[in-house]
Each structure stands twice: as structure tokens, then as C-alpha cells.
Length: 483
Image 1 (spheres, rainbow, N blue to C red):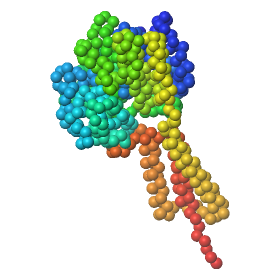
Image 2 (image 1 turned 180 degrees about the vertical axis):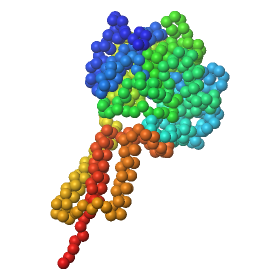
Image 3 (image 1 turned 120 degrees about the horizontal axis):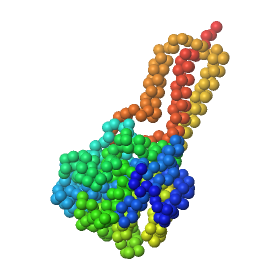
Image 4 (image 1 turned 180 degrees about the horizontal axis):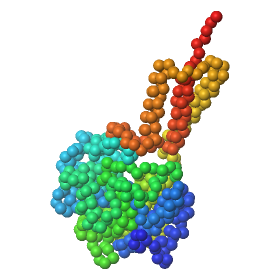
């Protein structure tokens, strides 16, 4: 059990969460969620709500791990700023000078303006808002250079599409570039560098960027936009965009290190200097912060609120921190439908803990349609069409047999045997592709498609059609004889 897992009875934020969270989970069809509260620069408590797995009824636990998605871009920013403090990279040097395996493609804009500082704050004018992960069975995972060049499931290549420094354009592509900067200047994988220089020194030992068997065993089941469809644990080539996997209290412990600790520990906890943390968390015009976002309205004391959200297939996360008040929270859920709940938690925290109404409509991210609905309709339509064909074909076969137009033949004709062989091969290939967890080799340009559970009906109808065709080959049509 995580320390301070149970809130004190007199904590107003905890009491309000206990009262409201069950109704929110029910209202938005979300199985469960976990919230950690940061107070006085440390994790005060963590509470788990709902279930981790609907089918098994497993209760959600404060020890469960989640993919934090883009909410953990802050970790990448820490990794970059550590190299800045060490004098290995310079914030105002073009990123291209640090890259070895890939370079920004030519554009109408001067790429020398794409500096490390601007990439960190989403003001470098770079494209690609976000990336999808790859299903575990997919091999090989595209390299970082392939992803940046456009082999990334339809997002296109990272390029300079706006004047560097002219405005804010959120870019996960830019944080993928920063991942490559870290790897190219250190000569080691991103995850290895981050664990050695950031995670281990901070005492963050629970998580990582790769789904291991141990992490999967401690993770809730991720659900999609239908609320009952189970997602898979996806693999990312683009670790720098976030997608750090850890428990909620462990990530809240990291967020708490942005402010002075309960015993006077400095922001950054000695891994980064207080001056660097101040630079990263100070509001700057037209930027998204160095791995953070800022509230559009100031806090009651006039300072900025730091926050960042994340969403990946089956995962929703959010953190908020009031640096001067040393108060904040981290929220995670394993369901795509949890987007509105993260804003309801934010509103509750702002009202109860800060005395401020954040005035955010919690339903603005509620999906107006199911992103996979069109695919479900297509799959069901094909299943129905194949089913009709199968039933009609079976009926016609029975009628032909009864009328003696078809008779049993133990050894089908050569053409029929070839057709049977092709049908069996097709059926095996179909089942291998759509209904097994065995490795599937695909080039980087071919996107992953998550087929809905209704695909089983399409497969059943297709197999029925093949079986009827095989049976027909043993009952060939009889040649008509004239007298």
C-alpha cells in the first residue's frame, strides 16, 4: 500500500471527492480512477475509486500503474534541462546542430530559429500534435528517424510549418525531436539516460516507458470510447512525448518536486537547480512552458497555475500545481471516456483547496461521437452481407441435393481441391491477422487498426462461407444427360 493512501477525515478535498467521484464514474461510464493530492510540497494522500477491471470486478488500487501520456512531457523537459545545466546543450542553439540521425526538412522558414528553448515551449513552429502507439504484436517498431520522417501512422513528417518564435503550436513532434537530441548527444537510449540522470536520483523507481510484464500485471485494464471495449498496452517509438508508466502517487511525488518540500527541500531536489525550475515554471508570453501548460487566468495571489493533460488509447491523465501555494493533484484513469472527469476533479480542487472557481466546462472534451463507430458499422455490414450469402448458398445447396442436382463425390475435382486449399490458407491467414496475438510484420507506412469486437461476427460469417464452399466441392453438380 502506498504511504498516506488514506486521506484524513477532515480533509475537505478528500471528503468532496468521496462524495462526488462515484456519481461521476457512473455518469460518464468510467470504471475507475486514482487521485493524489499534493499539499505543502509533498504527497498528502492518494485515493482510488471504482474498479480496475470490469469483468473481474477488481477494485482500483492506489498502487495501480497508468500510462500518463503527454502529462509526462515534464520529465522530458527535465532531461533536457539537465543537459543544459551540464553545458552539453544550449537552449538558444538550433536543435539541428545536435541531431545526427535525422534533420529538419527544408521549408519556407529558417530552421535555425528552431532552438531547443522554442521546442521545449512549443513555439518552434513544428508540426505533429500527437502520435499513436503500436500494438504489441507489431514488428518491427519504426525507428525514431522513420517516425520523424513520416512513418508514423499518417501524421506526416515533422517539419517547420510556422515561423519559429511567432506563436504557440503544440507539437509532440517537437518533443520527439528532443528525445533524439538527448539520445544523439549522450549516445544512449532515452529511457536509459532518463532513469540514470532523473528517475533514480529522484527516487522514482516504480515506472518506465516500456510495458514490462510486471507493469502490465499492476495496471488496470484500459478501456476505449465505448466504455466496455478493452484496449491493448501499446508500444511507443516516441518516448519523449510522454507516455511514462507509473503509479499516481509516484508521479505526484515528481510534480511535488517543482516546489519547496515539507522540510525546506529546494525545488528540483538538487537534480535541477532552483533557478532552472523557476525558469521552467515561470509564465512566459505565448508559450506552453517547458513541459508544462499555464492556466489562462491567474490564481488568487496573481501567480500562474501549472498543469498538463495526457490522453492515449485507454489512458487519461491530468496534473495541476499552484507553485506559490505548494498545492496540486494528479489524476489518472484507464478509460478514454474519463476526459470530463479530470476537469471535474480540477474544478473541485480549485474550489475546495484554492478557493477559486476554474470555470472550465467539464464536458468540452466529451466525445460527440465514437471515433470507431464507422469501423463498427462497416464490420457489422460486411458480417451481415456475408451471413446472407452463406445462408442463401446453404439453402441452395440443400435444395440441389434434394433434387438430385448434386451428388456426393468422395474425391473432389482438381479445381475444387485447389479452391479448398486456397480457402483454408485464406482462413488461416485471416485468423492469424485478426484474432491472434502472434507477431505481425508490417512496414512503418502501414498503420495499426484496432478492429472492434464485432469483427468476430465477420470472421464467423466468412468461415461459414468457406465451409459451405468446401461442402459444395464434395457435392458437385451433375451434368445433364439428353436422350
